Image 1 (spheres, one colour):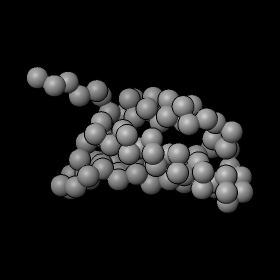
Image 2 (cartoon, one colour):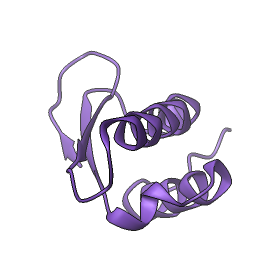
Image 3 (cartoon, helix red, strand yellow):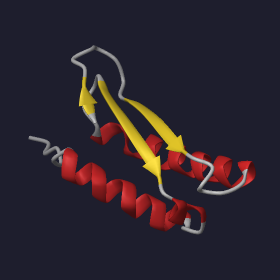
Length: 84
């Protein structure tokens, strides 16, 4: 995660190597991660770049498991925002 200071929405990038599986499996993992990150977008500060590297175990992980992993990692990097 890298805060750039730019005035734009956060961006997410994905690294999904061939070790994860075939092209079909990699694209499925990428689509799931994109959906998880879209839901978490409001928790990430503006102008932040986030890179997620999918490990081979992500090929057999469910959407719920991927979501829990991403949210756990984002929680470590981005403290929960409190509304006044």
